[in-house]
Length: 327
Image (tube, rainbow, N blue to C red; front, side, top):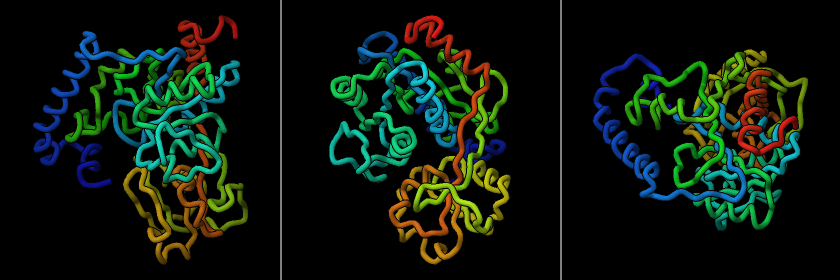
């Protein structure tokens, strides 16, 4: 995190106050844009299949991807053929829409879309034009439902269900909009979404992130017998949570190296530190597999939703007519 980002989660200081005029401008522009869509002056695209958006009102590190990794298999267990669309932040695909495949690299697909594809094997398509991605999927893959990984503020896309993920620990930071704070929309937006889900809560509206093992970055296989001591490397929105999980799993962190969220790693980023044991997230591991050393590891975590959350989601799918009653 840079100084501005760190200030979002501290008591309001001079840096936040100085940025408030820019936040006011951000609020004015984004508010006018929402009104234009609400009044129908700007039109939204309505897909011929249900679209579920999983997003957030803040930026970075809310735990959205682990929830998607749980959500897709859950929807599949209800008999639905599920596809995922993503903007593919930082990706450089040869064309768009671009369908992620076994041959895709992190540079082509982006870290999160590639992780989703590798873990789940479902149809994943990336591209800034979400309408084009959806039409490509409908024509070529015939899904029953499309999950949009992020895009809560992408009002050009009509949606059947909105799910907003909130970090239960950091919540809304100082409560300010960008750039004085971490928010893209104010907390009152949660009153209009279909489901608010709290990452790190064991209550009926939340899920916990449970560690499911240490894996080799090079092979993708679980490992044991390694020395639990080394350097934590991360390019995520909330590295503190990752490092806390490492420590909880007995890893002695001798040094931490933080990169910008979604940073596209190269071998040169590691230099001499690669001689040490390295520990990273699964999202970062997919970007490093091609040049990883034998002593590079990633911590795998999985979302475990409360029974209450599962019931809420099931009832919502039923109410929207996406599943038949009693499925």
